[in-house]
Length: 611
Image (cartoon, rainbow, N blue to C red; front, side):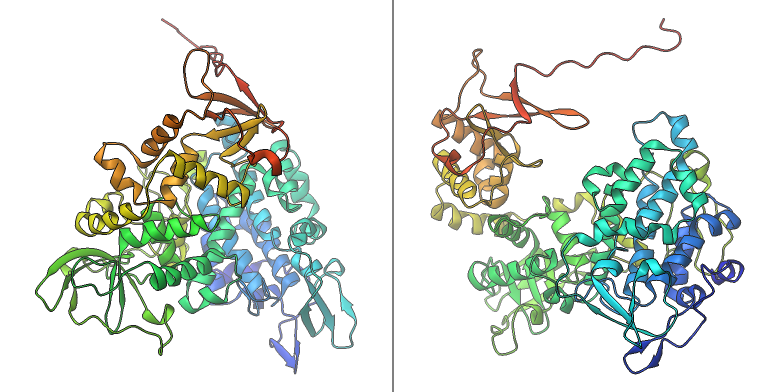
């Protein structure tokens, strides 16, 4: 196993000898890097990290294992958080290793830096990969400096810049700690992990060096592609830690997505979704499971969460299914996916097949508040859900990095590299594909939604159509309420509403798509006119004639958005009058201006024979 490396590598320091984790009541004895890393799961993570580099064992020890060993001795058995993810002894070490493993998995489908020529990308490939690992180690490292108070048995305070702990210690979280300060504090300690030779090497690559410094300062918004990959890897590690046990969902902070999902489901089941109807229904509760019609609950859950101003809600149904499964809310079927195919039969003889999400009733109701069970039957269709065939435990194919394309895949009992398939295609930049690193749920097939939903969808949508009169006025009322309540943000980097020319600029199709997401029943109405939901409501808005037209009669205006590094363009409507919405808003967005057209890019010079 990977312990072969640990035997050969000189420990980051000799001050911490192997010891039992607990030396006396309330105190924990420091351990060596070898002892800390010599557990089956951490060995597996180290092996996966090595598989994602193009280095010999000797090079790996110098560039990766030595910094990881230093990291292990510095963080010891400290947790990664007080009550959120990895909130257990050794959680910080586990989280750091997971982030590296996830980040290097993502790295395999990226050519860095993306703006450079191929020959530059090949020459800098290993430097960018190593920098990604160092940023992964450092992204939460500042917590031990500013979030925790660590002291020795005699009460003397330990500071992480003093070096690794040398005797039994205890720790507590500071009550006055500042959220996000730990990100900026990581730079204080990076010299504890990286030696002078590594820093000298990295600083010879200006773009990489800039990104790494910003990342270690907690400024991910300025750290470019490196910061984006670390953020996604961190999210994947956190999702796995919190999603392994459904009971952890409600123990997460109130702003956490998994908690919002569960709260949203509880709200819908208490106020909107209809259960155990004689015929078409939103779901059925049996003695051992809650079966919810997948498309219906996904549409309504997204609409509810968007109406509450919750960020980070997936746009598509498949993504919602994956997120619910990742967080342990939706139970996996026999093929490992979130979707179940089953047939409902009532006592009256009515029968119909649906695609379901299966939940544990205990997640939704207490034992005393649980509704009566369905008197009919819900029978799972096993013919469409074959059991999972045994396969290799890990697939690490998908690299396009010059000589790094010979990356190894291996089982967890051997280090002999196997050649990667030449026709392997790069994985998309999605956390859904990352979760398979540790046996997480696979993604759903793209053609999943070909399963018919017509009968329940029509039955449900018809009743809602009567309750809500969709119109241009309803859209404007929704917009006005959203802006005034700050549920619809303005003048932000990802905002769909901006202030331009002393009025409101409504981004299309984004703003109209959001309206459609919050009102999923609109899709059924728009379908009658062979339109998408956002096209239908945009036409109703245009009919109000509340917007300015260009001199040539066109409705859509172009706004140029000037950023620090690049310029891009937005299309949208300019209102004739802001209707009082700007009373509470800032002045015109200084980064936006109306332009007549998007300038054409200059053609690149042709190289070689042009005949």
